[in-house]
Image 1 (cartoon, rainbow, N blue to C red):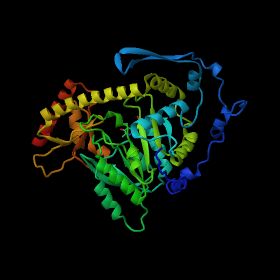
Image 2 (cartoon, helix red, strand yellow):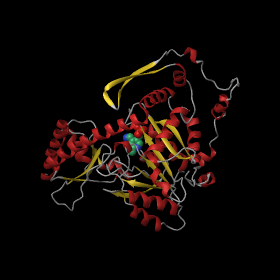
Image 3 (cartoon, helix red, strand yellow):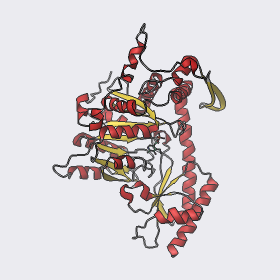
Image 4 (cartoon, rainbow, N blue to C red):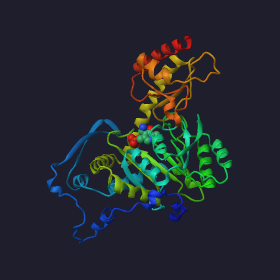
Length: 438
Ligand code: PMP
């Protein structure tokens, strides 16, 4: 048996926000587990009587990931249906929570009972919001990689955070820049408690952080006492040539003490975005504090969505699940290749980019002026002229705090066909050439 030295629960006193410390447990939800004692007659919760729920079964079909030509029927009935229709545990249906714990063991070598836990939310956005509000206080300084996922910016902004941007390049976050920032931190100014990153196929840059960068970030977290928020919806969409680098959640096992990573997983890109299925894994103290928040804000993720997810993953097994995610990744690799081919054809002389090895985004710089020293700003060109020319993408400014100017553009390659991509980039070329003439 290996020994993993988990940081003790008191260690997190420093990390919990005032709101998280003040939050009281729900007087009812906290007692749910007591109902499971054999022989107890529970008069506890205001659970509606499920005999009245007008559903007899839920049935769907899924392709067998090991042989996608075979359709497999799945039906949710009896006790499993009852679980799916009733209120349930705050951290999710126990069997699904355990299945996800088993997934973390297989994907990140994190074994259960080693001081970490997991909670299920309505997509990873839900658990991200809760984690940040569990750790960060109003006005705190936070470390963020930049450019950054546009959906997390408003969370930090709402908390009036000072966002210290750490630049990224083709190898992910520039950990040596992070070191410089931290080693020159002004005396007397409280150090940041968190660093936020999207380590694989980053949204928006498409970049995957190299393992040495990850190691250095972990080392810095240890030296300068911060937690790493590993927001990772594109982990299973890795299609790079080399083997996938280990996640922060896995790599931290190399550290003398474990418990500095809070990891966010999402099933949006691999099962369905509309199901809103995501989960957070990390130090038990942080996850418990997030659950207190869930207990007051939305009680739990939908039991029914969890029951459907559970029925599907139990039918597939881990083996089937990984076969499915491999198929998803190779689908996106083909899309990536087609997009890059079209980029080369239409914007090879008018743009610059690095090839993404995961995820669903290209992040490319438009050479907006014939003078290469002019940086340019893609906002107006993309929002107005390109749109009028029949192509819609996102100007890079959306992914920078304070809406700074940039010549970069984010294009998603997940949906369009090869023909559509070619036509879109051909249109963009026309707009670009006109821009450079004006
Ligand atoms: N984080 C990142 C980096 C994302 O790209 C997304 C989805 N766009 C999310 C979180 C939210 O994902 P979910 O659908 O699981 O809430």
